[in-house]
Image (tube, rainbow, N blue to C red; front, side):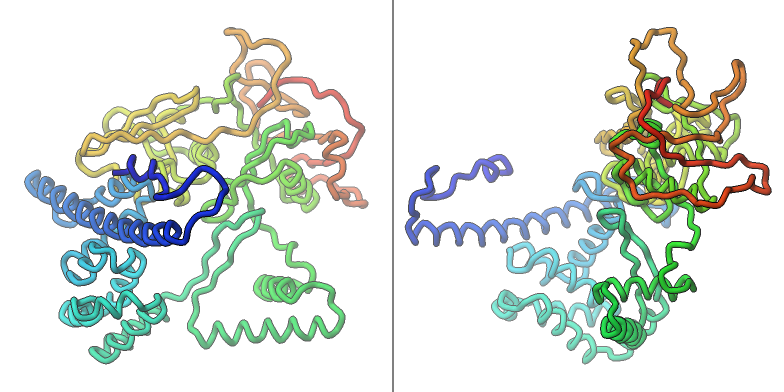
Length: 505
């Protein structure tokens, strides 16, 4: 079916730009509607399959004597992997599908016949989650029953949600009040990455508080604009919010110290390279890739504020991080930080976008797996718990020279997760021989003496080429004294372009 749909030829269409009759165009519109209905039917089939898989898994694990609260633990991860979404999204779909099939048969039938879209069917589950099974069934029949299908097909999403809330309030007003009280108790602030090294700072607060805060920021922006402020109203509101939250004077919101882990090659940081860097941590899932000049600017301002420290991570001639081992049951702090850096702050499971929360053994420690970089991976909590379910197996492998992990699910399906490519180091002009060392000092650093363990901190002098010299950065005019802790001073100086010796680190 998928192959036939992918190769579908437009009925009555041609490969030229000539005129097309209204009758043919009408056929295209009909086909658009039919394909949309097919998508809804496919979602219903997926829901039935997901629930059946969960029931079969629980039955198998019950026969194995597994406790009831642990049965079906890895099903959401299997569903997410099959649908190529995160385990969290797979679990959400599984829970919604179970509600359709067990408590809302009319909603499921409307989805199966293409009348109701997957998103609207999901909203029906969400907006009735606080009702009893009997009241949810009443809403289901009244809105999606056979006599209501014609009206349901005409309603927009907002009208449908409003109708659900109206029925819910009429059937059980106390449940609606309790839901509102629970919502107030779940107020919170979250942060997530946005494009171009920005973030979304979101506050979920009661309506009256949110409206009041927005009105205050709007009034302040209007007053500032009237006084001649050249910034846009949105810029003034954003700057004012940060200044008031951080307690800084106007124009000094950036002075608040915060740790940002920047994964950058020596070529970009020291030799004026144009390769991008990665911000793997410093927020729930990092900020992702940033341009090389932006990375240098971040490091320069950090050094200027006396808050920047560099840690060298060495790689072999093929660009792989050096393996380190430990006799500890748990990953030491340094090794755990190295694992998070290798995964660039994101869970190693395919399609999972959650931040790394656990450093895990690919081969479990109880089965002889060593605490090492090769046998380690960074996972979110859900993925780490899912792999402990019966029938799950993992093994390390190599894909294009990079560390990768193969996950075999209880049904025998195999999914391979490959670590991201690290930033490109400076390469030597000489060919790499088999007897070449596994690492070399970073450009501009004082390397370790022969036979000594490499240090993680160095005094560096950054020499930028013509391309990177355009970065708007000026070091402090006053001399900087040695820090009380005895740590070396890090200086960022501009100098004419020069040839940088050495190889990558």
